[in-house]
Amino acid sequence: MDETLVRERIADILMVLSSISAGAHAERMTSELDADDPFAVLYEGINEMVETMVDGQQRLESYQRELELRLLTIEQQRSAIKELSTPVIEVWDRVLCLPVVGVLDTARSAEMTEALLRAITERKCRWAIIDVTGIEVMDSGTTAHFLRMAGAVRLLGAECVLAGISPNIAQTMVHMGVDLAEIVSFRSLRDALQHYVTTRLSERA
Image 1 (tube, rainbow, N blue to C red):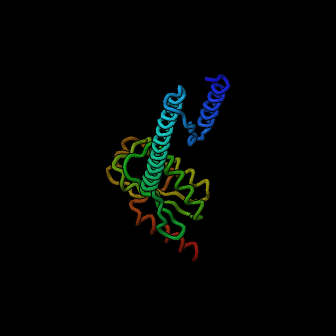
Image 2 (image 1 turned 45 degrees about the vertical axis):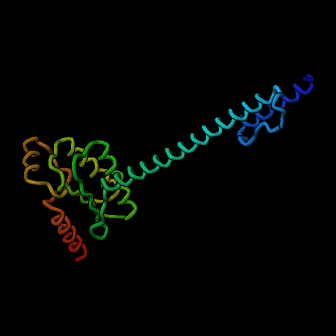
């Protein structure tokens, strides 16, 4: 075979491979060669290799898109769960209620405090009621979370009170020597709201 022709074909192969590596996956060795041409098998092998590579790339991109969609779904679900676990409800004009259910750890306390402070700022609320009716056990650590939360609320110019302490929790806290002197507490959410309404009426009188 003529040496010049060999060089031209090698150059063509290098150009196609270079284009493919740059992302032009549609490139192929398209010259029609005789079956007995020594380059025919090479061209065919290159085209098969490219087809395999493109197919693998497409599968990888498909898996990546699926993974991104699943991660987005997980993030949306996580956000929804977070919102459900830290609901802030406006129970009266400029009065917010944060019902707490279950165990309150450091991470959850931080999330609740962030949600409560954001709601107070956005809605310009004057009062925040932390309703602990759904908490079965309250220790010194949990109390410390509430005290920090109340302190942060007061820094925004709002008042923070605690409602719903059960007799069992109250007795446990007395035995443990837990001090709630820094935060006003009420027997129930209803009592807290009644106190707020009475206070507001007194201010207007």
